[in-house]
Amino acid sequence: MSSIAFRQIEGRSAGYYMLLAALGLFVLFGLGSAYYMEEHGHIVTGMTNQVVWGMPHVFAVFLIVAASGALNVASIGSVFGKTMYKPLAPLSGLLAIALLAGGLTVLMLDLGRPDRVIIAMTYYNFKSVFAWNVFLYTGFFTIVAAYIWTMMERRMNVFTKSVGVAAFIWRLLLTTGTGSIFGFLVARQAYDSALLAPMFIIMSFAYGLAVYLLVLMAAYSHTNRPLGDKVVLRLKKLLAVFISASLYFVAVFHMTNLYFAKKHGIESFILVNGGIYTQLFWIGQILIGGILPLVILFHPTLGKSRSWIAISSVMVILGGLAQMYVTIIGGQAFPLELFPGMHESSSFYDGVIHGYHASLPETMLGIGGIAIAGVIAAFGIKVLRFLPDSLDDKVIDANHGSKALSK
Image (tube, rainbow, N blue to C red):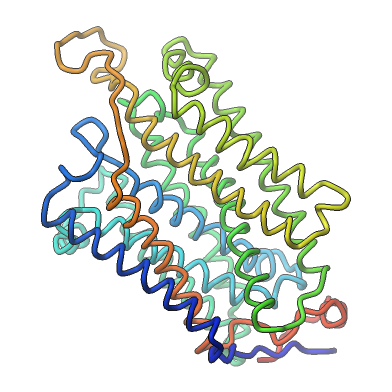
């Protein structure tokens, strides 16, 4: 039985320091933007009394959902027993923690009073799904950290499967909780659907795997480590499956809404005459984030090119951000239904489409969250052995079916 050795990257090259410097610069921009918004108030953002979740929430929710999906590679290896994925599992755990940390940082800094986050962590309203998510986020950090420990510490390997099962269940709960934030909002016609929770789960698979593929290929390319086609092509096929499933859920979601007369207004707004939201849905979410990546990944020539696989992964991420923008901001832009099922009228924004223009500080705060995730991932693979020394096809073949991996 062969074994796979894990090793840190040296992290002494000019390229590595340039990467950290660039990420650090965006982190500083993000922190500066948060400070600017705290000093001047949310009046300097595009958010209003009607659109209370803006661009920072688009980035934050995307990162949180992608964090759950990034753990998918580890789950396939340890929970479902696919041994080829086991060498990929530690990086999967690292990215899950990094992405969640980036997303939660954006959320915390967008509160306006980040110091009051301690209130949210010590006083709970269990009727609110937000309170549930506090436990889901902290639990995710704890379980994934333990999961990584069992994978990287030889003496703890016997617990990897059981902890992996717990992590798999918890990540499903976490993404269900995130999707339910919107699904439980009955006053917003764009939300108010039980389908949002499973749809967020399947989307998380695609977003997280796209991030994983990009990081894996970049790490091995810039450290001159062998990365065989078998790993890349297997992950590529998996990404194609997740993209297809995401498109299927989106189709079912909108077809279900179209079945109900009360949803015709919001469906017309998103699908036909919603302006920027309609464009982002069809061009950003469906075309760039779904159809074009599928064409590339299934193409007999392009689908074998790592450059095109990387491009398709970037397109999935961009499509994911477009999906979050349409869901979060488009859903709030449509007029609020104060009393579902009742008739009421007022002179206060009745039937008015609410405007929203993302400000630069909002956008920089969101990008800062991505940079924080990047810093954690880049620093993590430098100080700990998250990456196998080689993922060459011969190494994968030799270990395919092995039950243990050496450090």
